Image (cartoon, rainbow, N blue to C red; front, side, top):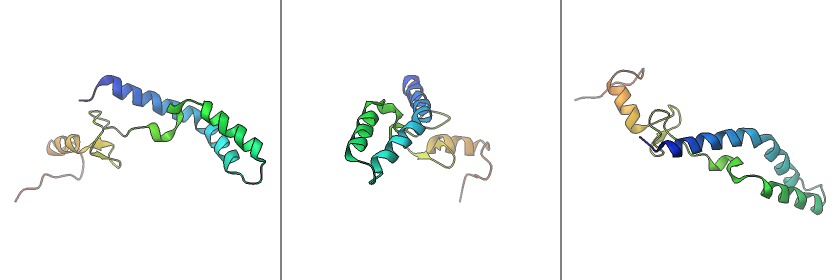
Length: 101
């Protein structure tokens, strides 16, 4: 089980990203627009730099929904390989059967 503080920090980051996504997209569109003057684009760059870092989507860490483990994460199932194996062995994940030969 992962530290509760790390899981909560990641949840807080997800909220920040969702809250600031629109504003960040607008500023990035202004920055990338070649038809605008360099001064306007530079002002947009400064405004983007003033925004909180945790508002960036790349700051989010994929974590297991069951255990909070940050590694060996399956995006499709939103859980780690260890949690998937345990739930699969107990028959709680449909379509997954323990192989034996």
